[in-house]
Amino acid sequence: MTSPNPASADLFARGQAVTPGGVNSPVRAFNAVGGTPRFIRSAAGAWLTDVDGREYVDLVCSWGPMLLGHAHPEVMGQVQAAVARGTSFGTPTEPEVELAEEIVRRTPVERVRFVSSGTEATMSAIRLARGFTGRDVLVKFAGCYHGHVDALLAEAGSGVATFALPGTPGVPTSATDLTLVLPYNDRAAVTAAFAEHGPRIAALITEATPGNMGVVPPEPGFNEFLAATCREAGALFISDEVMTGFRATAQGGWGLDGAHEGWTPDLMTFGKVMGGGFPAAAFGGRADVMSHLAPEGPVYQAGTLSGNPVATTAGLATLRLATDEVYASLDATATTIKEAASAALADAGVAHRVQSAGTMFSVFFADGPVRDFAGASRQDTAAYAAFFHAMLDAGVYLPPSAYECWFVSAAHDDRAVQHVLDALPIAAKAAAAAQERTR
Ligand SMILES: *Cc1c(COP(=O)(O)O)cnc(C)c1O
Image (cartoon, rainbow, N blue to C red; front, top):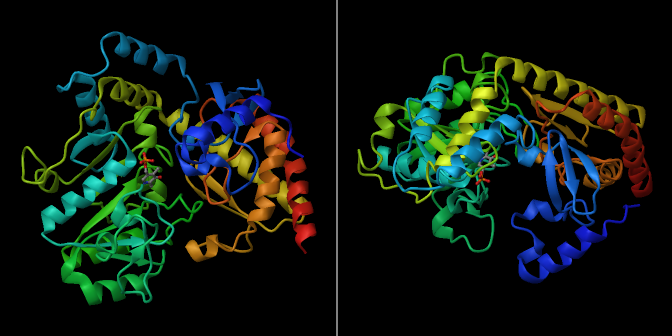
C-alpha cells in the first residue's frame, strides 16, 4: 500500500495538464513501477525531502551527478560566489580553463570541449568522428544509452550487420540507416560488422561500462578488443563516460580494474558528475582529432551556455573535492548496501543478481549473470515494482525502473546507510509476495 502523498499527487495532476506526462524526462513519471512520482522540494547530503514533508535516503543522486551529496556546503559556497559575479558572459572564463585542466589531468583526453548535456556531448563527438574520418557509419550496442541523439535512438535491424531502424517515432530512417546496433559483449558480432562495413565505419561508441541497462560490465578484454578493431579499420573508438566518468572510479570507467591496459579511447564523453549538479558536459580526446573542431578546424560545434561559469565552477569544486578518500568511502558504502540487498533478497527467496562497476552497482531481478540487453530484459519487473514501493514507503528512494544503477554519495553516512539496511528485508518480502501472486 502506498502512503498518502497529497501534495505530490496535486502537483502531478497540475503538471500533467501542462507538461507531457507531468515530467521533463520520462523515467521520472514512475511508469515502470506505477504510482505517483514524488515531487522533491529540497535535499541535503544523502536525504531528499518531498513536498509532503516526507524524507528519503536518496539512492538515485540525480541519476549520478551528486557524488558528494546534495547541497554540499563547499560546492554551494563556490557556486553562490560565482553566481554573484554574473552567470553567463558569452566569453571564455577562468573556471572553464581550470575544469578542462582537471579533466585532462585525470583522464586520457588531451583536449576537451564543454557543452551543456551528455546528449550534446555524444552528438558532437559523433559529428567530429565523422568529420575527422570522412566516413558516415556508426556502431553502437543494444542497451547502451548515449542520450537522445537521433542516430543513436536506434533498434537493431533484422541481422547483425544490417542497418538499424528508428527506436522511436520522430526519428527518420535516414537518421538511423547509417547506424549498426550490435549485442553487447559479442565479439563475433563486432567482427562481422567490421568485416562487412569496415571501410565505411566512422566510429564505434560504447559506454565504458554500460550502466543504462543496469550495470553490465565488459567481459575481460572487451574494450581493448573494440579499440583494436576500430584502430585496424581506421575508425574512431568513442568511450561514453557520461555516467561512469569520475563516478565509477576517480578516473571513471576507463580506470576500472586496470581495464584500460592496452587501450585509450580516441574520444570520450563526460557529463553528470563533472557538472556537479549543473548542466555541464564535455567531449574530448586525441589532440589531432579535437583540432578538427571549429575554430581550429572545419567541424562546426557551438553553444551559448557552453562552459558556463556557474556550471563549470560547480563541476570544478566537485572534482577537486572528489579525492581518493571520497572514492574509497563511496566504495565501502556501495559494498555495504549491495551486500545487504543481496542478503535480504536471498533470505526472501527472490532470484537476483548484483553487478558492479567500481562504486556503481545495480540489482537485477533475474536469474544468472546479465551480459547484454537481452539478459537484462529477462528481469521480473513486477517484483522490482513491489520492492521499489516498499523501499519508498520505508523512506528510501530507489530508481523507479529495474534497468537503472543505484548511486550512493560521500554524504551517505552511517545513519543513512542504516536506514537503507532496515528497509531492505521488508522490501525483499514484498518482492517475494509479488512473485507469489504471479506464480
Ligand atoms: C545520462 C547519459 C547520457 C545523456 O546525458 P544527458 O545529460 O541526460 O543528455 C549519455 N550517455 C550516458 C552513458 C549517460 O548515462
